[in-house]
Length: 290
Image (cartoon, rainbow, N blue to C red; front, side, top):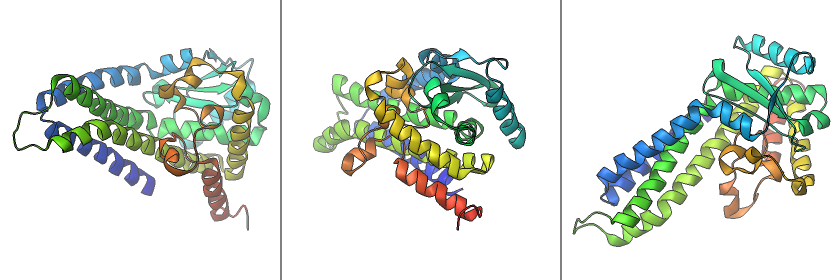
């Protein structure tokens, strides 16, 4: 509940920043144009997110005959929560990772990398799949699209003001306009990343409850962090190297970004040690550890 409220606050902050930018830059008309363009771009991405992401991950559909454990595991988790079963895919990437996508539970897809299959045991894999299903059932793709639309609109608005000039109001503060022109897109990006981190934390908690194995998910995250760093020179699929799509993965591809200082604000995922600590706390509440 707290994480959902935090997401609401962050989205409200993005909306407020967009309105503030439009007013401060004197670009009411530009605001509507920027919002429309951003909406078209991101709604299109949202509507076709499953096809786009799977194609960029080079995923192929996983048949029940070839991957019986995959189908039975996801089917059991889906039945447990009373939701439709998504389509299942496997990517040939050696990176140990997985993602879920789709505009709603009835048009969802889960994709696991071959590197993940090779690395995790059954309990850890179940924890990861429960995490990904939680993204689908929590409508995180929709939330992410809203955040991306607002952030993109702010960036477009700043560019619009830069090329066509800000407001002509004599009482306006040109220094404030310049500051907003520069800092507005950065602030929007930081808030968007904060939304993504918040939803990852929520999916960890929901996935731990769904699988009943928070310690297995914690172990998987630690393996994914180490595996991503170990395979950083092996390259990845277009989805893994794309800033837009890499946010979908359960763990930041190639080991993530900076973990300290200002650089940590640009992370798309929470620090692994923080996620593991949260999962251990959930395990304590479930009576699995003393």
